[in-house]
Length: 265
Image 1 (cartoon, rainbow, N blue to C red):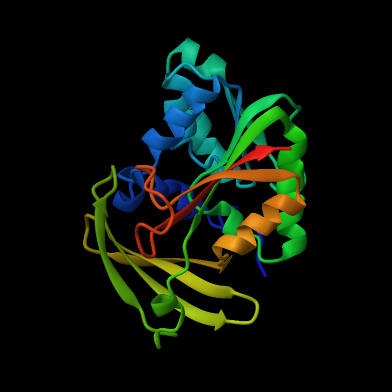
Image 2: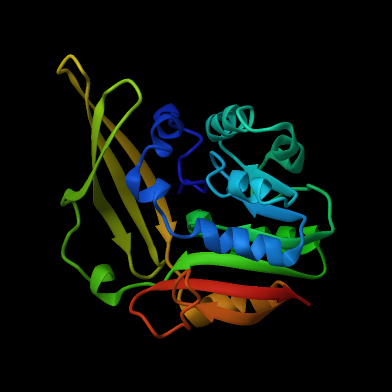
């Protein structure tokens, strides 16, 4: 199984990513920036991608280091940072590396894993390797924000294998190309808690020609107490669990998010 979500394997993802409405209008950025400010920094972001959260955090005056396995995504992040002022660039550090085994130094006050990259780790061995690497990078009493989705039983048991679903997501690229996105679940294993999915991008160029790009990846879903136990095994103590980025308490929305705030023991 692919352990990184396939982002490093497809050049087109970095090109499209910042223009996907579901990403660039996602309501989590303010949450992560506020938490970074509250921590005082420095912050470590795992799976920083093109800088969707990293750059606003640096703009807010917080020192941040971003780690990602995809060179294509990091290249885009660097290009965006080059458009920022010198003060913002000075506060942002980009590192290429694997979330399961990295060394970016220590003393971080906060580590974050925004928008699900942890769920591309499909084995407990890999999940614990990631959490232990983060534990080592945090300073005393440093905190971790683990952002995963809360599994929907209806979605997990739906009879939709192989069915392409139009997400009603359409956006324009800078060159005028029109892109429409759909998704498809190709395989699901209830015992291993994994699914193999595809994000499908149908592109219509300005001259009327069309192309289809497919991002295939595996994801593992985790339940609340499973995630808590993983964190406990890796030296963390859960302090809060939220159902949304507005800090709604877990259980107030279904399925909602599963946002765990844990402190290093």
